[in-house]
Amino acid sequence: MDKKNKIAFNVPYLTGMELHYMQDAVGTGKISGNGKYTQLCQNYFENRYGFGKCFLTSSCTDALEMAAILLDIKAGDEIIIPSYTFVSTANAFVLRGAKIIFADSMNGNPNIDADQIEALITPRTRVIVPVHYAGIACDMDKLMELAERYKLYVVEDAAQAIDSFYTGKDGRRRALGSIGHMAAFSFHETKNIISGEGGMLAVNDPQFAQRAEIIWEKGTNRSAFFRGEVDKYNWVDIGSSFLPSEITAAFLWAQVECLDQIQAARKDIWNSYHERLKELESSGKFKLQDIPPYSTNNAHMFYLLCPSGDCRNQLIETFVKQEIYAIFHYLSLHSSPYYSKEHDGRILKNSDAFSDTLIRLPMFNTLGLSEIERVVDIIKREFN
Ligand SMILES: *Cc1c(COP(=O)(O)O)cnc(C)c1O
Image (tube, rainbow, N blue to C red):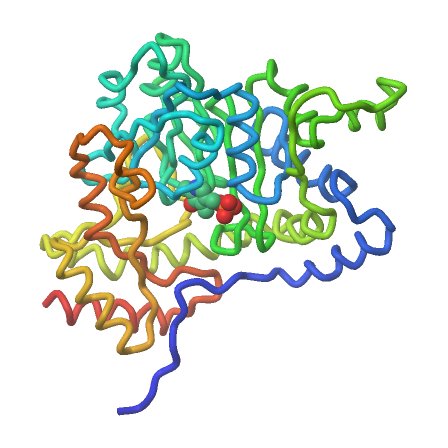
């Protein structure tokens, strides 16, 4: 048997301009945060996607932590998040002493089931955190309506959702991350546009913008000082070191400049998989990604839902034997070693089903057609 090349799950894509901009940043002598490249990136996102004030952070985890500080989350507060998500969605609020109330996913779609949220709301509920899994929108009209009715805040975990859109009942198409009171993005090397580690908080509700800048700058009014608005800078609030260096922002700028090409390449790959697998899906062998009519697809991820956990694990093993890295994703947080004892015992069957049966296929910009065909052939053989 001839040895085929291995296929990674993810290969970080470089546009070719990263080192150029990083060198420029170093050359300016200003390499700490909030310089030229930070401003370029933040302005771009605000203008292109209609976000409120944007703050680059060193990760999406940091952006979520900033959001929890900004919302004055305290011990006893309750935060509703889907169980099927990354730990950072929960940790940001647990760090402030809050209790996490886990919601189930929809049937057939990993996003939070908006119809089950109202039953979880109590007088202590403060925030709902929808996670746009795979860059596919949550049902934002329903979520925002609930938030308004119960006076709650919505923080979108948009880590995977850059350049994806939601069309509401009013027919308006809005960028994911521009709808909730705040939104957190990730530029981790596994996301669509990257800076190694990196993230951003979009502060859409203007009442939080000024304080966000202070928390971002370690609890000081340093930014206002540099703008000449105050004559001394001082410790004025709690905060932390949330800014990335200009070197990281310069790397990100190279990616931002190529965002349209990056997105077009990812969509091509996504479509190549989809065209080759949709027939097998319609014969009922497995399910492909659900994209509700209100959402676009930013081609962050390509996944299948297998009919059982055993079937999914078998498929992963078959891939590994061929040195192809297709992988499962989140394990439900409500049954995690850290938090299961805090959970109220409700069974979240959809979340558990995604933990058991979801498999993500290799997905990165330089994935070739012959590699896609190898992956697809294995799936076809396995299911026929
Ligand atoms: C990637 C991811 C995060 C964490 O992002 P970092 O930038 O690595 O901190 C949080 N939530 C979701 C849904 C993610 O996919």
